[in-house]
Length: 261
Ligand code: 2AM
Ligand code: CA
Figure 1 (cartoon, protein in one colour):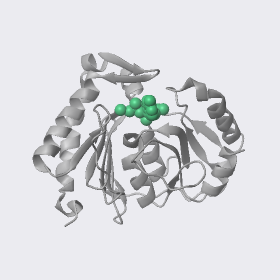
Figure 2: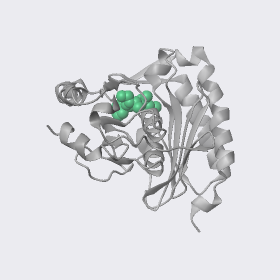
Figure 3: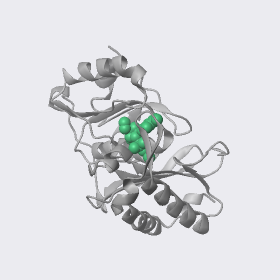
């Protein structure tokens, strides 16, 4: 039997929401360790991961656990696995900029089969189940039906942790900026994907994201009628890092052309 059928979605949502109370611990958010350039972890990240991992392991002992703040080299993608980012948008958390979230995906048979993204500051819970549609706080959501690039709002990633890519990244950003209504920089890949799903943004792109940054969001966008690929239009997988282009689908081909100019 598929593990998906054994999962109690309401209980997962309540586990995520109760762990998100840890986001409000300002002292823990200010206790920062630097993992690499512009790559931070706080006590909040560690505490949220520990709490969620413990509760998922107790309830679903047969499902593996992959999380940003642990070694994941033993994960076997032929078997079911939770993929967690305990805080996506850690830099925002450190700066009290309230655009960050918990992102959790369930990956089974080499597909994301469920995705949850929760922003505790806005009390917004994005959820999708494979072939079951996408929802924001229980209400169905859909991508924006805009096919005219000049009328589109596009969120860009800057890959702040790899400055050696800055020329390439800002060349892409300038080319996109010159074709669209305007650009935004939010700083949480998971939220940027969720915002495409509910029609606030028309597209988002960022190079070299980690599996936990996009696993839940890639399903939520797809279930809301959008598309997620790499910069060449190839399908993506959360089994390894990927360049990510997500869109409302209608502008996807044109976005690929602009990104490769
Ligand atoms: P994080 O906040 O969980 O670290 C910002 O550009 C986006 O990139 C965020 O979603 C951020 O996730 C992610 N990010 C931060 N450091 C990264 C790294 N070293 N590799 C890939 N993605 C990273
Ligand atoms: Ca994180």
